[in-house]
Length: 131
Image 1 (cartoon, helix red, strand yellow):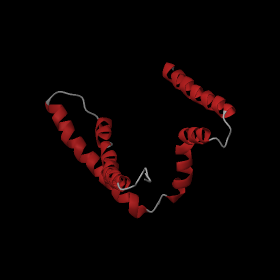
Image 2 (cartoon, helix red, strand yellow):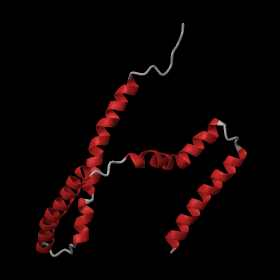
Image 3 (cartoon, one colour):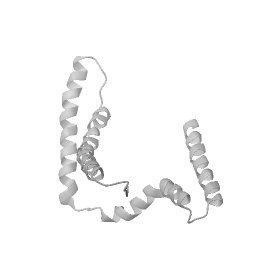
């Protein structure tokens, strides 16, 4: 229960800080706009992009199948290892291990994207000096 109260206090503090700053700043002030986007930007992103997600079974069924197959093989392999070494192992422990697979899949797309953005931003002239 104390974790819930702590989280509630943190969220309340953030909300009150935002409320006080929004009262002090004019709505068209650039600082207000940055603060508002910083605190609510993820919600704006989800509202704009969630309807664009494809729910086509051709997209998610192979991914779910790969996840379940990897869960099965990881569980068989690691439960045998745990039995040999007298360690506890459950199906949920295997699920936690396999849940790293989607994270690694997403990272495999993010890293090349970051490198492409880095390359594009490197070519931008950020400061122009006229002499």
